[in-house]
Image 1 (cartoon, rainbow, N blue to C red):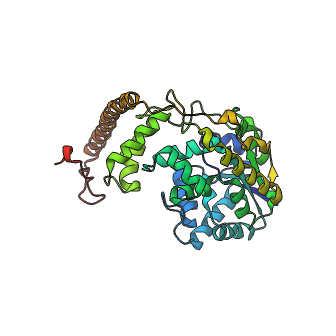
Image 2 (cartoon, rainbow, N blue to C red):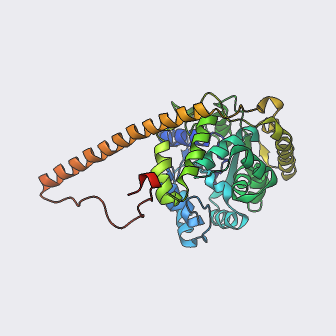
Image 3 (cartoon, one colour):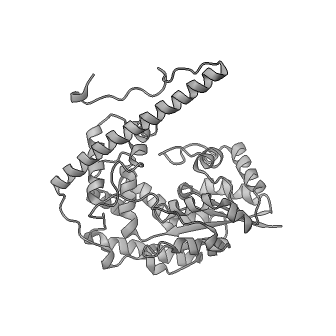
Amino acid sequence: MTRQLFLHIGASKTGTSSLQVGVISSREALGHVGVGVPFARRPVKVQKFLRPLGWEFVEGFPHPVDGKALDGAVRRIRRTDGQLLLLTNEDLAELDEARIGELAGRIAQNSELECHVVITARDWARQLPSEYQQQLKRRMTTDYDSYLGQVRDREGEDARQFHLRQDFARMAQRWATAIPAERIHVIPVDSRDHDAIFREFGAVVGYPHETVKRPSRMVNQSFGMVEAEVLRRFNLSLADRLDDIRYEYNPGVRQILRKRVLSREGHVRLTLPPAHLAWVQEESRRQIRDLQELGVDVRGDLELLVPTAENAKALPPIDEIEIARVAVETFANFAVQSFHDNHRKQQRRKKRRAGAARAGTTVPVSGSRTGPRRPRLGRRGGR
């Protein structure tokens, strides 16, 4: 009996984080309505699904496909209970035609599975500011206006990454090389209706949308304009320190920022400046034409993907006093968060030692001279 496998491949910043949190917390309820969720949590997706496809943190998919491991991933999918199967991960938006062919081919080898692809898309007036902030959390130092110009002109790696992850028509075209276009479902996301993605996604996959719990708080919330500028200047100040994004910058900076050390949604929201509206509209209409020619299944109004003049708003000049205030506030939050993190580590260490003492064993002393190098300090903080 054929079962349908729905691969939700993004795009990122279209409500994917909220949807994924809801799916993970609703796995049992989804199971009751016949929906199975293989690789639900991020660490499992990375190890068992993304790495076999050649994925690497920050770099995307630079490694060759591990065919044996990928076969194991497909077997795990087949063993998952449910007439409908759901896997959501926005990294899949970056797959090239060759990797898509490898994955789709292995899925198709077993007639039990019929592969579908779901793309959630949002207008670029919102996606450009959102992706800019995501890149800042990867140590980028480019100012916002320069970034917009690079994306417009397709110049540099940051622009390539944006188009790879946000050009919904190109994403659909790549997947259409391996599966029928009618099995590619595009959902234009209405940013004014935060519940729309849950309703439309449930309708596409085929389960009652109420089955998935809505997160009780905002997930992966954006920074305000001033907060984004503080982070950009912070990255500039680091210079060549913490330059290993995976082992130094991510644990030393990004993971701490996720705990709201740098405040979110400041008084001024980052928007698309009116000077960039025309080319964004032109690009949006090109993508809509390409989707229509491809013949994919569209669930909603494609005109939602074309920003209007109302979506483009001029940004005020940078207020240096406000920059200083937010920077000092972030520094204070960082100190408090560091204290609490260290306190929790000490408490866990005490519990382990107490447990080891009761069991008559010893606990190794934490710390090692192996591992990532010690980050260099600036001149004023030198050893």
